Length: 151
View 1 (cartoon, one colour):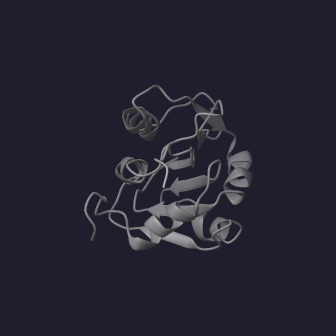
View 2 (cartoon, rainbow, N blue to C red; view 1 turned 90 degrees about the vertical axis):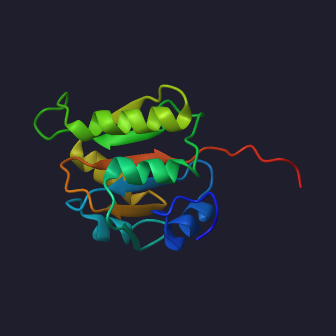
C-alpha cells in the first residue's frame, strides 16, 4: 500500500489509470455486464476486477485519483434502461452524487441506448468490473487533464 491511495485501488487499477491519457474512457461496470468480451476490444485489452466493491464505492475510489474531462459536454455516459429510455434505477442517482462530489460541481451524464453503449465501451481504454449486482451499473468515465507543477 501507498499513502493517499484508496485501498480499493489495486496495483492493476492504478497502473491502468496512469497509462490513460486525457480523453480516454474508463468503463466501470457491474457483474452482469459483458465485461470480459468488451475488455478484449479495449486499448488495455483485458479485464480488471475490483472485487468486494459496489459501483459508487469503486467510482469514488477511481475519481479520487482521476479527474473528469472538462472539455466535453458529457464526461460521463451510462446505459439507458431498456424499453424505458427515461427510466431511472437507484445506481444512477448514487453515481450522480459520487461524481458531483468528486468534481465539486454538477457533472452532466448522458444516457446511451444499450447497443450504442456497448459500442462506446469497446472503444474505452479499459474495463473495471466491480462486484455490484446491478442492474444498469455501467458507466463510461472520460479522463480529464491534471494540472501538474513544472518539473
